[in-house]
Amino acid sequence: MDWPKIAVWGDIARHNAAVFPDKPAFVSGCRALAYAEVNSRINQLNHAFTALGLAPGDRVAVLSRNRTEYFEIYGSAKTGLITVPLNWRLAARELLFTLLDSRPAVIVAEPDFVPTIDAMRPELPGVRHYIVLGEATAAWIAYETMLSGSSVAEPQLAVHPDDALCLIYSSGTTGAPKGAVMTHRRAINTCRAIAEDMLHLTSEDVGLSVMPWFHAGGMWYHLLPSFASGGTTIVLPEFDPCAVLNAIAAHGVTQIHLVPTMISILLDQPEVQSMDLTRLRAIKYAASSIPLSVLKRALQVFKGCGFVQSYGSTEMGAVTALLPEDHIAALKDTSKENLLLSCGRPMPGVKIEIRDGEGRPLDPGEIGEITVQGDRVMVNYWERPELTATALVEGWLYTGDLGYIDGAGYLYIVDRKHDMIVTGGENVFPREVEDILYENPALAEVAVFAIPDPKWVERVAAAVVLKKGHATTAEEVRSRAAKRLAPYKCPKTVLFVDKLPKNASGKILKKELRREYANFLTAAPGK
Image (spheres, rainbow, N blue to C red):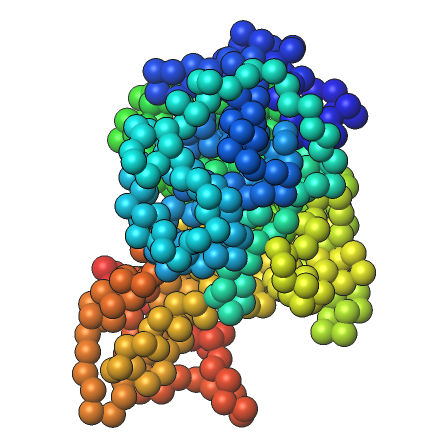
């Protein structure tokens, strides 16, 4: 890829259509889509949206599992449209909040999610068109029918590198989602950094895309770098260990992006020992560090494969990398095993500082808030100037994560300033879960926190105090929460306690809860 000539998202699709016209860009099931065809379909979609009356700046929300049409919808940026990827794992009320906040002109959905959206229609007067990735109905336009009558010519509308490309929603400290505005320029900077500085991708690579594309990790940290490099991407709708292993072997996959939980699950599959996985050269993982025991097993199974970890987020892209040589060093020298707990060192194009509560930079080894400055940090939160002003100060993003940088420049996260839980690669903010638990009339006080889990890395746990004269069970607490929350956010462990640990001002000390129950699953397996 000639990166200096790539200014906006559409440049990547146009470039690869010219250089690799007949090469498969995507393989999804039995269907292969060449680069030229992908670009033509993107052009058709842009003309179709224009015919429907959409204008630059309008939002297009998409509710779908991974599929090639999802990537095409991002391509509507050629005419200045802004994609809003929706997390299909969310409960209906959570989806509704995002839709009301982003106010899309169009919703594109898979057939499985049509009933969910139909139930919301009375509350979505601003949505002008509903498009289904399947057969048309009286209320839904068929995506393929819409494309079939449109021109394949390149749209002529000028798009600027600093125009918004997408709004990716992440939970805030109060549990209310907020949309990070990612521009063409900043998304492309992240894409280039991962393709060149981190994974060294080429047109010979075959990527397997299984991380959800509503995540920045699935789209910007994996799919777009793979596409931009001219490689072929195998698309799976979601993570299934057997499907992943079969795809790696059948397609000669060379690189994949996973979370540590997924890696562990793959290693537990009986067939993994007998499959040909020798072409796999790079596994990128994120969301949490990888246990040493898992890494050792993985290196035995995926022989010759390099492991890369990255620290980043929706708001800042990928900013650090723990490279294959770091993983090897940690295995060869026990004094360096601690490297596996780090996030690596800053990548080119970004600066990281650890700051105290007054915003002053701290020395190596001192713990403070991680702040980031660079060419891939978000512009702002969508229509949230106050939140933006708090998060972005003089060009520095205050991440809310607490950590330190050692003498060699490696970044370590020691806690989350806002107590975020990462379970199976998904972010869960305790306050959001607590708000739902407090609706239970039997509960007087609740505290949601993480405990170590051998499968999910972290498990959502809730310590609860009963109201006087009330009784309930752990199963009842979980089932009530499940009606209002996505499954991964619901507490898997409910602990009944007489009182919660608090400081002198009455604030609940979750650090004490994490310490007290750190070995809970070991001491009480199956709970």
